[in-house]
Image (cartoon, rainbow, N blue to C red; front, side, top):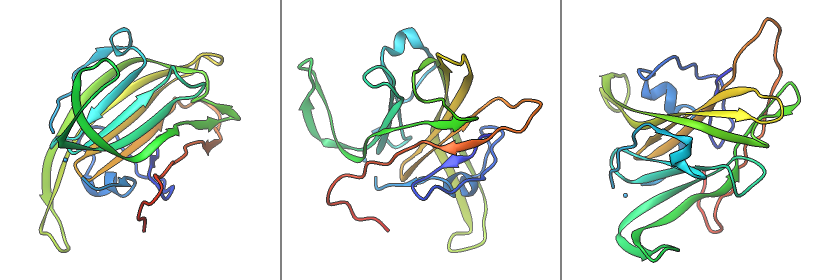
Length: 203
């Protein structure tokens, strides 16, 4: 159970490792415009505090997952703007950003249990994908380049552990939930939301 999620709710892109093709990954990606590179490294949850972020290889997009300021897991996606340096709450100067998806719920329901509600992150394993392959279409070569993270999550009440697998490209973001199977069929349902900023142009 590990379907990729995008704004249109498309499911079914199977993924079994970092070599998943860009075509199959982006088929379930959240389309987004693009602007700073920051490599993520493996960090345990104690070092993550209450959120973790992934930045695209070219530093254009940022995906942030949070789990303490809300009863459910939340996420947001922003375009980074190196030309706009602004102060944060601690008075430090940080790179400005413009939201693509404002703070939204991230979750999945399995067997009537909402696994994003009352969940916490235990660790994050980061990885990079950088590959190319022949393709039929407008371009003869497809390029698959992204920053990724496998985020380990535990649902407190049921004690169910699962993975949120995220990839951030310079022009889009995709994520999926990887839930352990069992010896009986399991019934999944969607629990993600997408808060699109006012005035956005969508298609």
